[in-house]
Every structure is written in structure tokens, then in C-alpha cells.
Length: 239
Image (cartoon, rainbow, N blue to C red; front, side, top):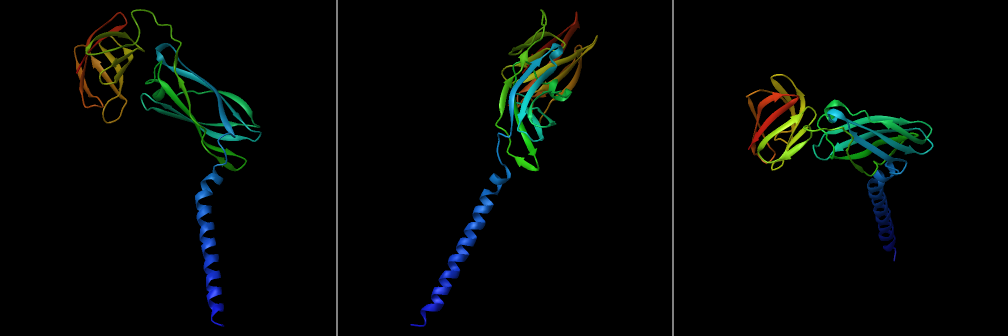
């Protein structure tokens, strides 16, 4: 008769321990959700991105926030070249604000009209609280250049391509892409992307000279500067 009391107390203590451990588990699991309050405290209302002459990339973005001051970071990924651009911003007193994106040279010089960019707001802080990253917004770079023949981007298989400064040549079979940054009397300056072991790769090729790169699929690509003149450079692409 008296032996049942210790068993009852022991069972009660085990139940309390189980409930305590369950509470700890729920706290750990839900902590990230409590930390990241919402992805709607700050949001991207609109984005415009465009390629200008020489294919320099510009753009502006309108971001809206609730009534508190909002600090956040804009992250922009070029989904074609994997180039990344980021910038820290502040909106005071809430509302909407339009900002010039001011893409840096490293990002701008390897992005071209038609590339799709991915925009995300991250590291959002308001009134001492942190919020989840926004859902990504995708935007293609619009072409606002005044391109006149014989200039213009080119793409295709092994061939000779005559292009101007600011133009891109894309080797379609491998995805290797070359931007003509500058043309001088005896050489051309290129930025090459889509190659093995990272990138972009800057190179100068003098007339009659060849430089090799390796595409991501391990194909060897030879780039030869065959001639320069009239503001054009002729590039022979061989794989």
C-alpha cells in the first residue's frame, strides 16, 4: 500500500523532465523564426537596369519600408556570369525611396544587355530587430545603347568576328564570352568570362598574337587578334 507513493513521484518527475526537454527543443527550432520576423518589413517596389554606350551598366531601384528607419544591404547577382554586387542602404522614417545603384566597374564591365539579374535585400534591421531576407526579384538588363553598324555584339561558333569597343563576342558552343574593353593601334584589351578556374580574366592581345583560355567544359579556346583598324578589331576564335 505504501510502496505506491515513490512510484507516483518518480513518474511525475519524469513527466516534468520530458516537458522541459520538449520546451527546449521547440525553443531551439523556432528561434530562427523569432529572430527573422518577416520578409515584408522592407520590399523592392521596382527595378530598372540598362546598358548604355560601351555597355556600362546603370540602374535604379525603389525600396519601401515601414515607419521605422530601415538599414539593409542590396545584393545583386548576375545569373549569367555569377558576378556579385552589394551595397548598404538606409531608409529614414519609412516610406519609399529610389536609389541609384552605382554598379562598380568590376560588375558593370562583364554584364551585358539581356543578362538576368537577381535582386535581394539582406541583413535588414529596424528598431533593433532583424528581419528575413526578401524574396528575390529578377530583372533583365535592357539595351539603351545607340549601336550602329558595323558595331554590335556577336555570337556563334568558331569564326572571325569584327567588333567595336564595348561589344561582346560569345562563343556559343562553350559559353566563353569576351568583352572588347579598348582598342589601340596595335592591341586589343579584353575581359573574358565563362572560363575554367573562375574569372573574369583580363588580357591584352597584340596584332598577330594568340592567347588561350579553357572553357568550363574544359574546351581550349584560342583567341587571335588578326587586325585592328577603323575602330574595329577582328578576333579569330578557334576551339
